[in-house]
Amino acid sequence: MLEVITAPGSIAFVSAIVLMLLIGIVQALGLGGDWAELSPELDADASFDALDWLGIGRVPLLVSLILYLACFGLVGLLGQQLAHDWSGAALSGWIAVPAAALAALPLAALATRGVARILPGDHSTAVPIESLVGATAEIVIGRARAGSPARARAQDAHGQVHYVMVEPDGTGQQFEEGERVLLIRREGDGFRAISWGDHRLPRLEG
Image (cartoon, rainbow, N blue to C red):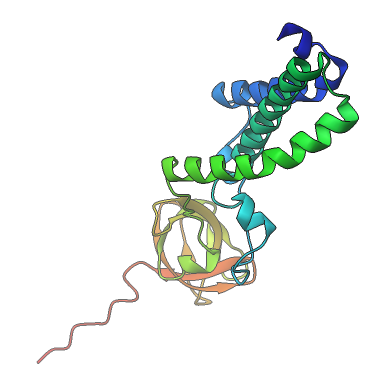
């Protein structure tokens, strides 16, 4: 087996396995960022295409890459070993690499589908900034006046914190630091707001 691994035609396969291991180590050490975000967006109207067949989009893109590298490296080395046992010499890389690259595609697709059943489903809690309309916010930096917005902190429906620029909806209003306000509409790069409680209707006296 060592003779097959060190053969010139096996360099690509050994390199693929080494690269796969390096990516795995980097991710395990937390140095590669959030791999779950590396997921391509597929066209929802495409019922069947090459990417769907390969399983891309079912798992993060980096996982698909790792699985393909593993399949390519293992298929290539196994093919070289069989060629060595049959003919006494490993195949040339010009023959072995394209053959292994094609043979690894269906195997990687099957592996991707299997991993997709194990990994938790991807979901995103990202929301458009416009969804903050109707949310409460707290002025954290500055004093907000008409034409002079201040920085405020708000939370969306998922509990994620957003920092937005806020100014009063009325010309005679101003908001101080620590004051709670109600975001009533998006305007330009910021929001218009009213003081918390101003949205409450006065009680009707019977």
